[in-house]
Length: 384
Image 1 (cartoon, rainbow, N blue to C red):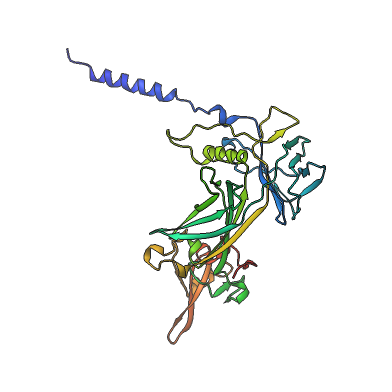
Image 2: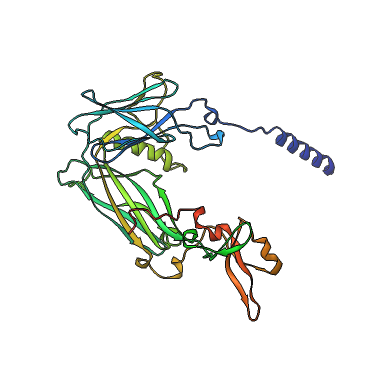
């Protein structure tokens, strides 16, 4: 008896329809957790460096937002002898005080009161004297610049280190614009209207740690800081990095190691399982509520270096790749009117013809001409 293929096909379609129609979206419980926990980042600086703390709230993955600053809080550094040093909110979620010049023989803690009157308090922490940075250097591979740091403690007392950095670089747009469009005409661009050369800025987002605890000497040699691809516009003209160094206690170091594993080293079956990072911060209003962060108190050491493009290989592998595609368009005769008052298409250079003179302009999109979309024309005070 031959099988009835039409019946078989009908049953197959019916089964597939039932299976796919019964599928429902699944939202894991972690995505919809109602809690919004306080996250505290910063260091109590002992010397003339500013004490800066960043306060944020955790957000649900499903919320669509990544930053939730805690604003309007009262933030205070307290000493073990009763001293009190208030911090001022300088921008949303950032609280700072100028050089407090604290006594490094005392212990310190952080107190936070939110707008909602919740109180947070850290344990008192011992201070750490950070040794100077010996050097910040760089090495060159076939397709990247690798920046590293060297440091040591001759007293053999530090052993645990953390670094942060701020980057600044000079770059230029794809095309130089010699003209600017007003609401009524296209006129030559003055020097204070130039948008070709700019300065970009960024700061570290990964946790950078080093330890000499397993070594006979307290020496950190060529600890990696960051890698810059050879085609990055960061190294198109000149690049500068300011590296800051902090000494940590072993408990603080272990906290950052745990956070680094949970945030930067997950994603495969061979990675460590996520775990709770021990903290010295406590919600004293609601003791069962977690707080994310670890308060440290140390002096700060810093060092800045500059890297010019002339110090790098001058080969095709080191040519800048811009973050957009650019082309020049011709605007001749009546089409010149398209550029007047246009903020998205910018005139670049003039088009002249023999016996006719000026007949139009070459133009390009603003992203290809105006470097202020990704930086500022104001040169930093520290720039060479």
